[in-house]
Length: 283
Image (cartoon, rainbow, N blue to C red; front, side, top):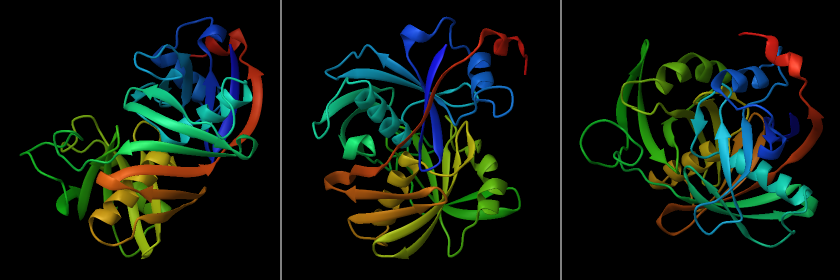
C-alpha cells in the first residue's frame, strides 16, 4: 500500500490512492496505519481521488485516526490539493473543485504547491444543521458543563460540527482536559470538534483545538474557519482574521453570509510503501 505524507502546520495526513490500496480501509486498518508507534503515524488518511457525484475535479474521503469518517477538513483539503498538483492532476493558479462528504469546495494552488487557498463554504450557526439538540435556533453564548466547569459556547458548522468557547486565557492543558468531554457531550449527536479561542485584537485570534476523532491537534483549517466566523458573529473581529495555532497561522477571509476563504501552507514530507506484515499487529 503506497502512501504520500504531508503536513499543514503540523497537522499531518497520509494520502492513499484507491489504485494503490490492496486491502479495504476498515476501521482497524485505519487505526493501525495512523498509529504513531505501530503504523506510519498521522492525524488521518485522505483517500482519493475518488469519483465525484457532482461537477468537481474529483471526490475525497477523509478518515480520522480512530477510523471514523470526517465530513470535511480544511488542512486535509489543502494537503490533497497540493497532492493533486504534485501528481500533475491540476495546475497552479487555476481554481478547481473537490467534493467531500461535507460539501464541494473550490481550491487554488500557489507558490509551487507550498500555499493553497480553499473556499470552504458557508458557516451556519443553526442548531439543526450542526447538529445541536434542542429547539431550532442559532447556538450563540449558551452554557455547557464539562466535568467540573461550565463554559459559554457557540456552535457552528462548515460541513462538520464545531463547539467554540471564547476565554480570556487558553492553553494546551485546557483543551486536553475539557476537549474530550465536550467532543462527546450529549448536546452534540454527531460529536463535535472543540476550539478554545482567545481574541487578541480585531484581526487576530488564538485557538487550542481538540479534534473529533483525532484528539489534541496542532492546527485545523475547519476549526480556524469556524472560530473566526464565531468571533465575527459576536462582533469581536473584522472580516480578515489571522488564526494563530501551535502549528502556525492561517488567513481567514469572512465574506457574505459567512462564506469562508482559507489560505495557508502545505509541506510535502515523504512518499513510501506500507509493508504487509504491519497489518499482523492487532491493537
